Image (tube, rainbow, N blue to C red; front, side, top):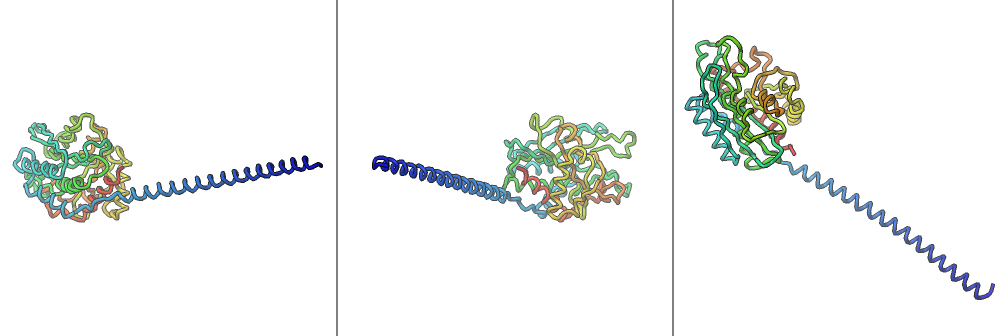
Length: 353
């Protein structure tokens, strides 16, 4: 081999060596890029997870005040029996509407002349308070605010023509919703909430009138609203009715019409109550079925709705012994029960996305 060939061979060797080195460098760079990308993805996932946890922690459920709710119940009772066409009824309507306005709700007073089973014209008003009214996702919370005009379940027949004070059967649910409204005005939940106080619920035909029990003679205000909603085409994800939710040691079973129309809502509420330690109030057992405001919201409005209502399997009526008697007074409203139901509902509503 001459010098020229040796030089060429050496040059070729050098280029081959440089080419090999370049390939190795590119290979190492590729591995480094892949490693850096992997680290970036892991950090991004971790950051996303941390942000999700921060957002999850950001959900603050206001502390329901049973003392406040109790006072709202008492205030209604102080007006007297809120029987349609009476002064007490008129004064209480003004109070309820003004309180919702004071809490920042958009208030609508839906007035109507409703015909009772006996032909009586009932000057009625459904009181509606909307929070976060522009939100598309909505929850409906409701209770009746009127009093039964006759204590027809009283053990003393002499009292059958006297009105019921309706501390538990009426005022307890309304008082609870007023306390929730107070908080919603200060700390609005993510979803929109409509609170409705339905009128003329308890003017149903008494058994003493004889004949057909006339189931549709009850819940007249709700029937009217369901056919004439305050917002055309109104709908909500679900509805929750509060009826007789303040009695000492009250128990709430899974009402069967609620199970039929909205089983998932029943399960969600009862599960929430159990997780909060209120299982002694919310019995995870089958209860009875009742014609109540939720029936018409389900049937006419098509909004899956449930009834949180006291059920006592040891009484003939299934309710407390004071039900539709002159003894439905403040003595039958307990702050512990108000707290159990109110706190449960606050968690249900404020955890809605």
